Length: 476
Image (cartoon, rainbow, N blue to C red):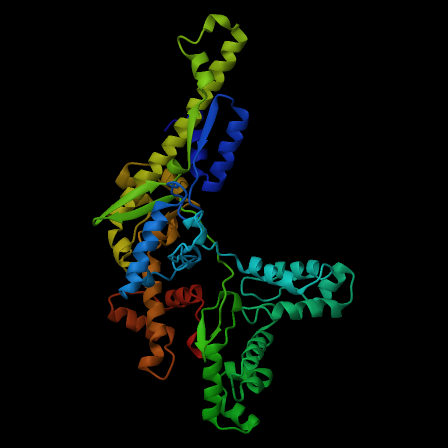
């Protein structure tokens, strides 16, 4: 293939993410007076163009989901919850509520709650409890939280950075640790668990022997030395087991990534560090049993030629009224605008062809969830649609798809066959204690996978389990 400047420019446009494309368009608009942009108001959730003051797609989905909740039906999206970052981009519909009260200026789109990230929420709540002098310290501490919610720096280092006493840093840190999700701001596992336990004790939740177990025998607990712990604490082994079960069920070693559990009506183990919306590049929807594909960019904006430049470049544009320099200026910028718009349209067509092929080949995945995912490579997809593999890679890198169940996932999920196996492994581990009193080893998981017709090596199971952030059997 001969690599021409036009092909290079097309590949560069194709590889851009949605945000990068918007920046590129803004730059081109600033540089090229022959190009104009007709921008449309779009939904911040799905990217669909507004109809009046509301998004028709989200309104329809909200009405449908409300009806499904009324009839107690269960969405198939519940089955799709494993893999790298898939839950990070879920667009919830539980934030919709009916009724408009007496406000005639009511805007339905305002009832979609924009989910804040954990850091944003922490800073918002700290603003209410810290003074102006303490707030910079609080911002520094929040910015120093790692993905688990732990503080990645020491109070001494923060004190040196602000040239203040360490006690002032500890005072701000204590305020941070009192904000939900409990355990955020801890410096190690022991402190994290004790913070959560304190939070529960303030709500009058009893946890016999748990505090002493965490403070003195946490390492021994991880090594399953139940007899030793019982002897040292002067309690029975059964009481040690009860304390252990309480820790496993209600305390979370990763407070920023926890799930919600409930005890005596109290919500525990909450929060997510990766919350936030990702606007999809392409939407796959289902209508009357058929899947439809939309490239959202075509709804967000329309590029067009400036009427003035189009007139000046036309046959009847009065070319004799301009000198050679002006005519060359018009010719160059009009050609550049046409070339840029052509590349944008080619990008849309390429993404449309790729997504339609994925819909045809991964129909079971769209219908049944991750268990229906077929093994497919970008090379295979490229051969199906007659494109070069590099073109498919550029067109799918850093871009997202909204599935019919309203989950927004990266294109890479369509090419990650291991997601199906990971889902099975997760199910096996979640149900292991119901069938046996012991946690299953990786070898036993391999055997259960073979019973289901899935053959993988033990080290592969260990790798997938680690990616799912599930502890080995000795620590479960």
